[in-house]
Image (tube, rainbow, N blue to C red; front, side, top):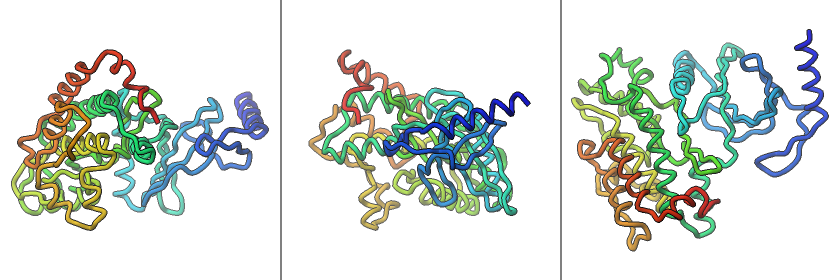
Length: 353
């Protein structure tokens, strides 16, 4: 009874008060907003942040702690959709890492015979790496090299944690029938600038873990190859997709080096403020053909030869010639150590948008 009184008092306090709209800079009353309960805690809907094909992201405020959260709601139209949402929850639970977005809570709601997965995530007001790059481009500016290395090091550190968790460096068990294969095994995570959040100090946070699963797969036959190729077409953004996923060979090994290619595309986007194949895609040309050619770094380039070499080493069409995440992280740290001390300390604040 005492807890109910406290909750009622808290609700009354929220209704009497007004909160600042952290996205639009306006003040709004939330007394008429709907609420959701997750893990016995109530959260009030503030506003919509984003939406995709089968998911929505809303800004919510905790009734008890007064903190803002991002509530990701995934519409699960069938059993496979629910399993995919459950996998995303499990992936978040698997990691407790400063460069991987944490999960504050979750719930599955049944509505009209359909499920809705609700993932409660920390709200990062600064947004994604892509939004930062867009602002720099709009200002006709660019990202300083120390800052690129600082952010990239965080991305690499998070990716290394994922690769080290048993989702890389080992074979997957024998594959199940084709119908279940795509939902159980995934050769890559969808690594791209929109799936990297940035804290105020430029600490990178990898998000959207729903497309992640075992990273090392032995392909045995054309049927499995086509299943993986179809999966990649649905889950891996075309302009950041590794070449080997466009036409999967019938007998090969797909491993974590698919992520290294995507990582290189992210590095390119920080250097050039656009992805290496964005223009190809926008023009309607074949990205599948474009990725077979060596990446071209526009010259003259304002960045060091070391950074250009690092980029080129990650974007090699033949996956066997690509480095692993340990090598990429080592090279990134080395390049960061070559920056003047003042630049290193200011890398998280210089050129900020």
